[in-house]
Amino acid sequence: MTDFRESGEAAPIESVDQLVEEFHLAGKPRDRWTIGTEYEKLVIDPRTGQAVPFSGARGIETLLRELSERFDWEPQDESGRTIALRRGKASITLEPGGQVELSGEPYRTLHETREELATHVHELATIGSELDIAFVGLGIQPVSTLDEIEWVPKRRYAIMREYMPRVGTLGHRMMKQTATVQANIDYADEADAMRKLRIGMATAPLVNAIFANSCISENRLNGQMSYRGYIWTDTDRARCGLLPFAFRAGASFRDYVGWALDVPLYFVLRGGQYRTEVTGVPFRKFLETGLDGQPANLDDWRLHLTTLFPEVRLKGYIELRSADSQPPARVLGLPALVKGVFYEPDCLDAADDLVKRWSFEDCRALYAEVTRRSMGARMKGIPVLELARELGAIADEGLRRQRAVDGEGRDERLYLEPVRELLCGGRSPAQVVAERWSGPWKEQVARLVADAGFQATPGKPA
Image (cartoon, rainbow, N blue to C red; front, side, top):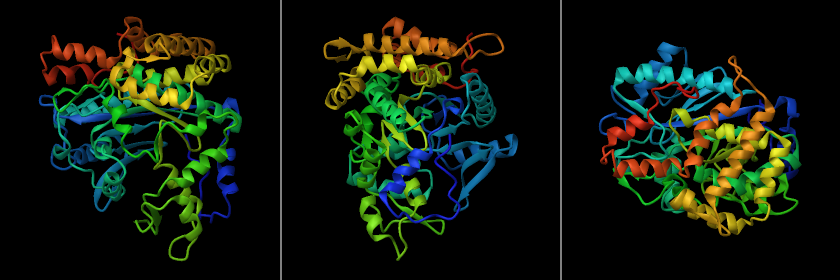
């Protein structure tokens, strides 16, 4: 996916209409729609479950440098430290606690995504085996406390680190301990975008329940099925969560722009340097004052949009952000669910019928309940499990209709099957993990690591 247009020299913002127009210009005809997937993995010691530090001979910076030297990734440095990699349209970046994220190329089919992910896992596993580190698909770091996790030395993260305690109690946990899988989709025009935004917001609690996978932290059950989801509820309420206006009839790009204008800035970039004089200032105020006599520009706006974290985010495309990270067999379950629902018109209609009577308050209350109970929650008396099964069936039909087959004649329902198996069994990933943790695993973290580890080729049936 691409974030709006390439800016060249940053253009001053002359009106709010200019910001609204950015979203209009990002629309695409249906025949150019792609699906993008971003996957975060926790990097841990395979025996203890402790987070691997950024620094050191077995650290994550060493991992990045080895990937660069062995697999033709271009290193991205900051203040002399390697903090990211780029190859073609794909990138490997780090979250603040060293979580490794692949932002993959956008593809027309998930079969292409599968091949990209298989290559990524092979490269990680090759270097990881040499460094004796493991990569796991869990929504939260299972053993290390906050103080035991080294901060990735990015200036951006240092600024966020200082700001977070001013606006919530769990921001540092979000930054250092959590991991997610995210699906990115295109839209045709404003009406299509806002409809997808609304349905995405309303189904966010169901997505969280389906992919809940963060019930163990600090080496014990934490009382939540999606602790990652719970953490987001008290990170920064000005920029996170569900957006009330999205549930209103007639919501528009201008509503999203208006909301974003009122969210405080983290920073702006000037001459390649982060400037913090504007930290905590709403973008709307910055639009009036500028900085050092220079007006706010479109690059400031685009950067600001990347620092907003609602459950469904609008940039030059739509990001669906409610799922916990998953082990390899289920990583492509989220983009499969999303592609089946959102890229088939009749299926989008069916999803709309499922949630159209749900208000913002209904969905906010449900989200709070599903982080704790996942499939045990209810919406207006209806079991979430029943609703999740219906959403899964809608996605299955959408993928069947799209008829995107691989070389063996299998369509993209292949990637939804592990999720459907869980739904048929009536449990979320976290419910399964919690039962095993207290039962046959005997609270042994090595068993958890083996279950969620990225050693196998993802997306292919055994």
